[in-house]
View: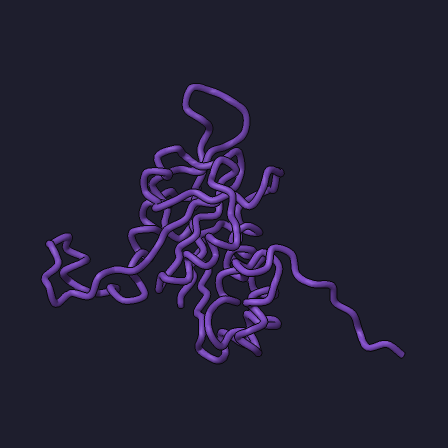
Length: 204
């Protein structure tokens, strides 16, 4: 399974993604996680990706154009990259493999993320996350993505931490990522168990 993160701070992910379970899952080829600098998709001279809100207001808003270009570049990259049928916009034939990706905008107004969502998202081959910053993103971005997700009613500086939380929640449900497949079934918030049973270390 592939995870792509569109962000203006790609380097802040390196340490967390390369350690522990996620690091081993990548080394074993079970998951692939890529970060993409949104500034690489802008045409502005100073690699600008934000602008003042139209009509006035405080803060800066992330522009729709670079996010659109990033999404178009990455969506379907797990199977359709370089496919002339897909790239040209021509209707796919019966022999063209269907795209199985999902694009997600991390936003406070999104639907609250739950364990059921984690299980639902495992059916996709690729998840593309848009991590907003500043005052928010241009509202037109919501029309470009498949869904909007929030991880809770609290304020963060951007969508990077929510992206990490969702990636870890989804990845650990992939067979082989955890040491024992049963361990993911016997955890808090699984379908069978609402709150995990108490845990103890060995008594002395």
